[in-house]
Image (cartoon, rainbow, N blue to C red; front, side, top):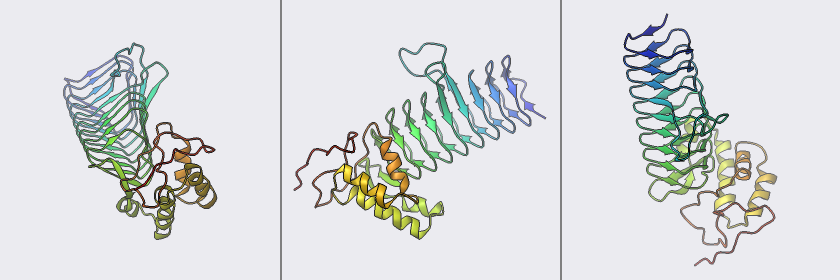
Length: 285
């Protein structure tokens, strides 16, 4: 049985699941879909074009499916599709796709803290944590099991790989590879996310493999084509195989490491480089 507060406003052609709780002064606009077992606190707004899966908890003053923040945006807009068992804390905002046929996607089991913002056409995977006051620009991709700390700004079209840890107040303007930690002070890679990997049950052998791959990528001063070749030859299986897959999908370059190895003649490229090309040489101290 649904519990809908008498002050809530439910639009036309709204699809309501079972065992819903909709609090005081909520607004569910025309055509929205709410799955079973969702909990909406007071003053929540679910805009048109939103499909909210089952078991989601939505706290006070959250706005799901707002219009894209884009100067030339014109209706009709796209949709916002949300999976199941997510938690949206107070004042979270998520915008629907910029154009008809475009979709902003949030997967399953994510936890978004107070005042987090996800812009139009983002794709958020599963079991991610996005902390307070973090902003994701349009078309950002966040894979699975990542932790994005407070007050982080992620530039549009960037990607954050699975199991990455993005430190507080980081400025992310390139892709963050999977499994790594980004330091909030410098916005640079400072190693693997070892704490997170251990908490997620990675074995010592798997972590050792990731360490070996990390050294190839960041510590050996290799050409980018050599890095990709070694990853393909020696790390084709196991968790480290995700590195090469991620690098092949890059369009904006990749966040560099904070330290530069003494023997390095080149750094990890800041712009995408074809496999048969060599990044420009960089003189080292």
